[in-house]
Image: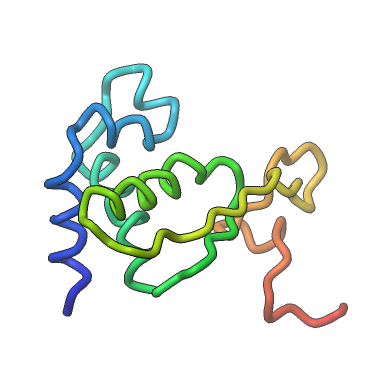
Length: 116
């Protein structure tokens, strides 16, 4: 299994300040980040390589993690960097919802959904 060694290598090559830039704005500004919140961007970055993604198409809110993956390629001497395609956030299906969320099935459209 190469996932955890890769994640640790990502963490080894960047300082905490750089990783914190990838964290959600709330905890980052308050200075109350948990260890899990700092590990999460490392895992998101590792996912790019674990999934062997050539193209990362994600919302603009994930741009910092995607750029971390490209920076990791330089730091680790990897030849091919993932292409990053960032797009605006999609509004949720519920009234007043600013972004679609997979954690709320009633507000999202999934790839497996039927036309109904």
